[in-house]
Length: 332
Image (cartoon, rainbow, N blue to C red; front, side, top):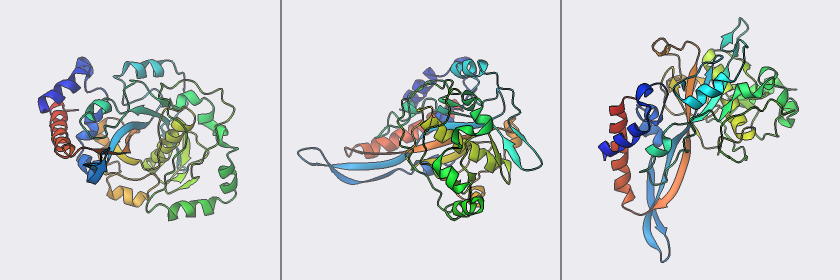
């Protein structure tokens, strides 16, 4: 099976630049893969007439989020991404910082490449079909990403903006476990396109105050204690914009995050305390080896749940072992 998976994955790689962009193997090859996967199964009953079966629960890597400078990306090897970036004219000095602790980034979301192939032998499958393009781009928000004007009439933001200290306190209290809320918007699954014409963003039910900072207004600059935390805030902003404005990223409230670059981390929840994240290796530790001094890459895992026949208990373990061996062999 290992050889079959390796051939299947290799068939979808571009031979001349197979290491030019992150894929599902990038995630599978991290040391925390099995831990974040968190595969659980329990006895259940299926069908009619009723028969014994197994209920499976686990997480699967679904989409990447990157925060970068202008025209920069981890996905330069994907032709769709190259076309998208080639049609933008953004020249703002994003991926910069100043003496007041303000950090600015562009941000993009994209489905984990080959995730659907990698999950083919999992009981509930998982992941989205490849589109080889960004599903949401901050450049496609125009002046909204520079000013935050799209969110200035959000009722929750108007309420909390009157008490910023209380908001920070609320975020701090919830940061032990993190806080994540389903957006309730549909995922129609398409490539990002221009949304700068919108007068304002749709109503949002997302919390304003998180353990990472203010989620609103959603634009490309944030004041933070350090660059990594600022990147998390920006990544979270584009995540909800991808769901609520671009309708291209699902958000169910049980997502698990993982840093892929500049360091590979353990899993963590949205808004979880920054001190706890440092213990989970969410840090700049490997920054010098990446060659990207300002950019970050995260992957978001989504919960999967289903009931299958008993033989899936064994076949799932066989598939995971073969997938890890195949990805290690591909070296991505």
